[in-house]
Length: 239
Image 1: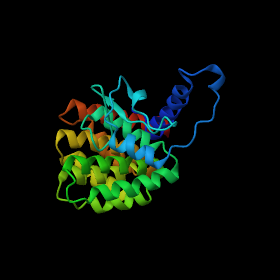
Image 2: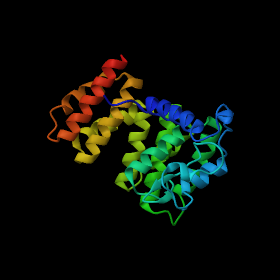
Image 3: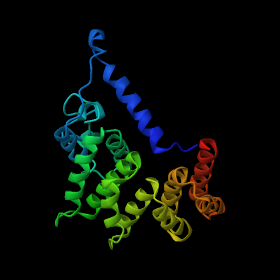
C-alpha cells in the first residue's frame, strides 16, 4: 500500500519526536523543542551546510530536528544542492512538516530561487518539488499559485512537477492534466502521474481518475501497473 503524504508527514513528525529524545540525558528528554527558525531551515534544508557527516543528525542547524539537511556520501546537502532522489524525498517531507508560518516564508524563498537568471534547471525542479510538498500538506494556497505559473514553462520536467504537485494538492484541473500524462507520458512520467493521482483522487473523489488508474493496471510497464494498483488499494482503504 502506498501511504499518502499526510501519513508520511505524520510518520516524520513521530520520528522527529523520537530522535529529539535519543542520545540525551534522560532528565532533558522531556525538554520542549523550539520551533524551527526560517534562517536555520534555509541554511540546512534548502541549501545544506556542506559539513562532514555520518547521517542526517550531523546536518542540523539550531535545536529543531526539522532544520536538518541530508547526509549524502559524508556531506550535508540541501534540497537545492543535491540531485539524489532519496535525499530530495526526505527534504521535501521535512518542508511539509514545518509550521505554517515557516512554510509561508519558505514558499517566498523558493519562488525567488525559481526566477533567478542563473538558476539551473535541476534547481528549479527541486524548488517545484518543495512547493508541491507544501501545497499538498496545506491544501494549496500560495505554493499552488507559484506552481500554476510553472505549468506553462518550456522545461517539460519542471512543468510536470508543477502540475502533478497541484494534482496532489487536490486541484481537479491539474488531475485532469495528470490523467493525460498517465496515458501518454514516458514510463517515468506515467509512474509519477499515477502516484500524484493516487493522492489527488482521495481529495477530489473524481471518478474519472479512478477509471484512469484502473486502465493503468494494463500499462505495458510493470512499474506503472504497480503504482496504479497501490494507489487504488490506498483509495479503497481510505474510503
